[in-house]
Figure 1: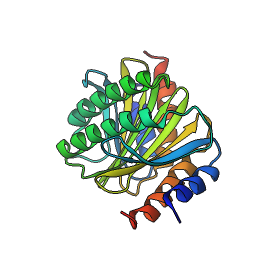
Figure 2: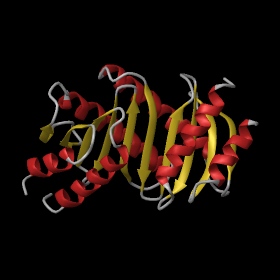
Figure 3: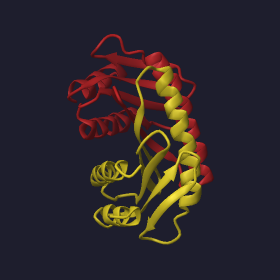
Length: 118
Length: 118
C-alpha cells in the first residue's frame, strides 16, 4: 500500500477528518491526502513540526522520554500528530466535532504501517 | 467547591492520573493536587505553559482560532492541558496506559467548573 493510499484509508474512515499528511521534521511534506480542499497542509506541517521539536525539548528537560504524539484543539479544528520516527511524523486534521478518538486510533494505525517503510 | 477539591475530584476519578494542577500562563502554579508524589508540577507547568504559548502563536498564524486544548504523549506519561481563559490552564498528568479519554473528559469538566471562578 502506497503512502497516499494509507493516508486516504485513514482519512476516509474518520468522521470530520479533512486530510492527513506525512511530514519531515523540517516541515517538508512527503505525501498528503486531502478530502477537503483549502487545507494548507504546507503551513500546518511547518508550524507543527516546530512545535513537535519544542515538545521534544521540553520532554527531554522534564525527563519524560521521547514525545510520541501531540494533539492540538483550536476553535475551528483538531490536529493529531504522531511521530513515525525521529525524522518524520503523520498529521491528521479534523473539523471541530469530528471523531477525535477514532482519529487518534487511525493515525496510530497509519504510523505502525508506515514505520516499516522508513 | 475549592480549586483543590475540583482537582482532587477529577484526578481520583481517572485511572492512571498522577495529579492535576491550575497554572498561570507565566508557569506559576495556582493550585495542585498530587495523587503520586515525585511529580514535578512546577517544571511541567513552566514548560507546558511555554508550549501552549507557541501553539497559540501557530494557531494564530494558521488562522485556526484560539488554542483550547493540548495533549502530549511521551514514553513515560501523558499530559492533558486545557485553557480556562487566556491567562490560566488546567493540566493533568497520567502514567502511560492511564485512561486518556476519561482524562480529557474530566479536565474539560474541571475547566467548566473553574471558569466561573476566574
